[in-house]
Image 1 (tube, rainbow, N blue to C red):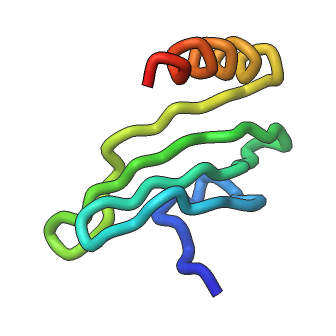
Image 2 (cartoon, helix red, strand yellow):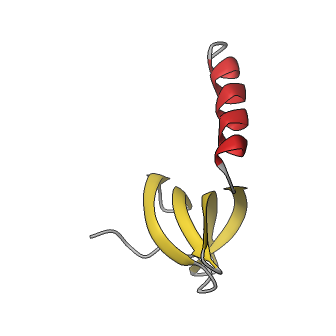
Amino acid sequence: MSEKLPISDFYKVVDHVTIFRSEKWWAAVAMIESYGKRSIAMYMWQFRDGRWKRKHKFQLRNLDEWNKVKKAVDQLALKL
């Protein structure tokens, strides 16, 4: 069983996938819900002072936003 993501109780975590996790860093993609609306958020936390603290959050609120991000990443990924 996976550990509960260190996300504010303001959000209901519907599902999530951990991308990577080490002793100091944790990155995950989560489907979150608030006020009946769902979105997908990419998180990165850093373990400091005995707890996980959010460093980055990038949220996708609709399919149009996802398509724009996906197109940009696909375009740049060819250059890796």
